[in-house]
Length: 230
Image 1: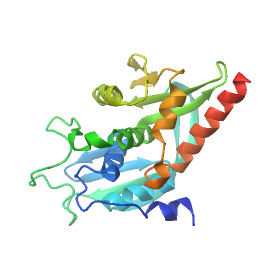
Image 2: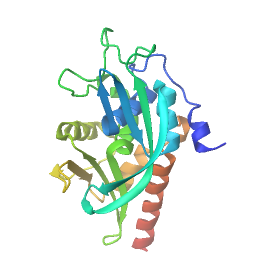
Image 3: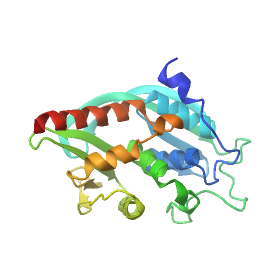
Image 4: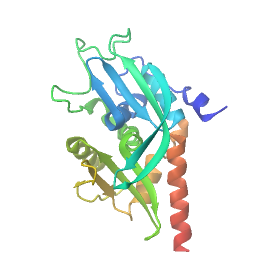
């Protein structure tokens, strides 16, 4: 069975707005790489298995394409990658986007995300955010692993930084800075990246709430860092 096939076999709550590991992961992705409007939701994933998970949580239609984009930290570099877009119609029968309910969308009238319902699932929320708007890389010059979050919305990244306060591993961060493409970013300190990354993906196989390609990239980067030290 492929990653994409097994990814849909996850525990999904009946209410996609309720506090649950699956919904925390889903809304982390939406915040990181999605667009929420009265018409619906579009969220983009670069991993087929994680895209299938998002569809299993909230329904909708998936489309696959390839795209070329500038690297956030250096616009002279472009990369081509798979792109899976999940579209959820605001008029569907699930009520996911209904504003008449007592819960409503996890955004306020100014577009700010409200994640209080997922306070017991910070790991899954952060994992979704990392896979939605984060980067993982091996820094060949220093022999360390880099983990950073990049987004056009500085307020969202400040919210991500607040989530680190409750992280059970010590994960100091750099200051929020502007990217060359006009967005914002911050990085986890290199010394803390291995422990943070290990915690973020710990036991994720039990729930299926992760992107296998992103976890493999993290594991390869950690292996490269260990070999560099040797």
